[in-house]
Length: 424
Image 1 (cartoon, rainbow, N blue to C red):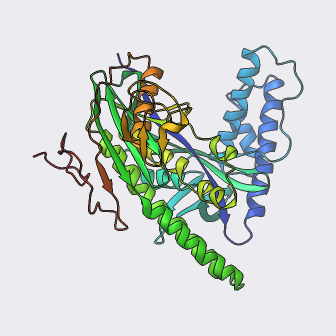
Image 2 (image 1 turned 180 degrees about the vertical axis):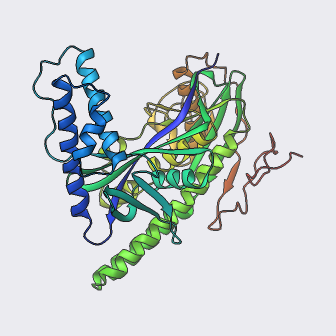
Image 3 (image 1 turned 30 degrees about the horizontal axis):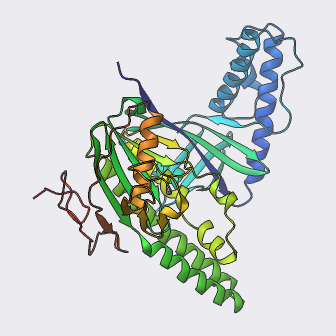
């Protein structure tokens, strides 16, 4: 039987609280600490655990559901103390604020506003609510909005807490109908090479390379440079408000393009049998970048990780697993003979100094990523005797694919412009 993994995520948000209610929320977290500590005290005294929730709730200045969730957390901690035989350790009580735990639509509520934001209402204390707007990563906000609009999702418990003096809400969401297939059950590996102006894809199965595609998005680099120039001008003119407006426009532009490209990657991957999408693990890359002021600015602003994570969570919605590999030498290694040398690559041209193989450099890197993905899944790497001719598509500002560069016939139900269609 194939192992599957339920689509469960914990989403973290900062709270933009209306008026002066932040003090109310902090007071409630202190009350939650008192509830937790009182539960521990009663349990240690040998009070019947079944009677503790009602006994604590009688004196707690919290919503009953919230009190019950905090008590359950404390009793769960006590079970662990007994299980690991460390009940004799110090008090096990908490200092400072303690998270408010609440069930959805009982202790807290979420809703979409007309502006597309997510509003929250937390029952901090009986008949006293904390309201405002959630702020967080685009990825987490997109997932939460999907959960609010879809019947296939359950929004579960949440914790309101303070982290480094900032109010946060951590929300659990579960898709009960959707599962993510175990990556070891895959039949096709899709290597994804993310670059400054494109993303290159290669689908590799036990029979060899199934197909490759290069998706250009050079407008992201162009627009970021344009906005950078405009911001410098308004900054020099002392117009800080205009500077912030331009920065917001740039972020929305880039986010929109990344969502379109990531959706394209997932749709392209779905045509292959049981795909697993493989990325380079680039989390350490930014720390090692130092090529001078101008080049550093360009590279530090590239949306490598954002595009990878947008693609990853969109793939999970389709039940497609993802994997991460070491990026070492993926752009310098010849996919045909394995020869590795920095001189093999010059801009978008790859020419192996050993076997004379020539290729689009980014497509070659995606082949190497797919090969590393195959090895990570413990497959036998298929022979790469030949590679398909590179096919490129370009995404325009409207999101549609326009003026494609076609270098080989359409295959596997994809039109030459990269959209789903019927092959000739």
